[in-house]
Structure formats: C-alpha cells, structure tokens
Length: 114
Length: 108
Image 1 (tube, rainbow over the protein chains, first blue to last red):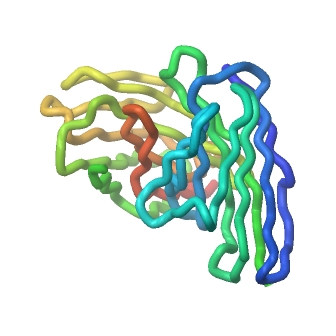
Image 2: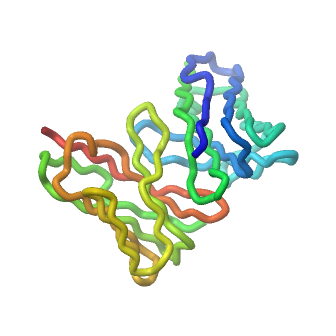
C-alpha cells in the first residue's frame, strides 16, 4: 500500500491568486495523478504527473492554469493559477501502488475561492 | 475515453435493506474497479474485476462483471449505516477514469 499526504487540507483564497498543493507519497511510485471533485460528485482527472517530463493533461485542462511538477518518484505539486470562484473544489492526489493494480488517494485539499 | 454511467445517482434506504448499484459503459472495460469514499477522505479500493462473468464477494458486498465486460454491479446485502458513502466505479487502464458515482445513505 501507499500512504499519501496532501497539504494544505483546506484553504480560502482570493480570486486572482495562485495556490500550490503538495502531494507526498511514502514510497516510490511510477504513476501519480491529480483529480478535481465537487462535494458529493465523482472525480474528474486533471492530469497525469510524469516524473522528469511535462504532465499529460486531460481535455479541458491546460498547463497554464494547472501547472504540475513531479521532481521525483515520491512527490508532486499542483498549482491552481489565477483562481476564480469556479475553481472552488476538492483537489485530490493519487498514486498507483507498486503493482500498478490499485490507486491510493490523499485526503484532498478543499479549496474555496472568494 | 469511454463514458461510464452509474445508477442510481442517489439511494436512501433503511438499515437491513438490500441494494444494487450499476455501472455501464459504451465499450468494453479493460478492467473495472469499485471504490468507496467517505466524506473528507479519498476513495478506497473495494475490488477489481477483470474477467467477464466474474463474481467477487467482500463480506456483505457482491460484485459482478458482465459477460461482455461492458457492465458491472455492486450488491449490498442487509445494508448498515456504516455502508453510507459515495460508491464509484472506475475503468482501470493506464489511468483511472471514474463513473458519476452513487451516493448511498443508510438510515438506522
């Protein structure tokens, strides 16, 4: 199994500012992902964080808005840039276990943009 | 990316009742997983099904994978308040894509 620590757990931000969310895994993993989730709804994949190369973004998400870093096999960051109230959501980090058969998730970052 | 449909979207039942949640796709799943998420937590894996017709049991939960691998169901027997949560099916390939989710509320 993999234990994922995400921080901050929540934040309230002013529109127009940026927030960087950190994700730390307790073991080396090959695949890391970032999701967005509205309360009570499903998870939408933002991007796959690739170690040593640019992240792979899903349709509707762009690097300028959601820059992602993955400097090593245990750490990734997601930045929500130039925030607007529409960015208010829960952001979750995920990693595949070493057998690549199970995804583990952080507890999420609840972001409110005012 | 294929579309995963889940039904029902919301289910509110009394303790002791049985329920079934469905997950359907327009195309064949490579493999399918079921997750459960509680408020304030990330989803936790319940089961992975890979083979058409496969049935897996996890205590009071029974998971079925359709013969054609385009649908799956989760059946809970004698639901308990602790089963309350968001249930998500997901296609597992080189990334995990989730269905819309089913919110289950079990009242005591």
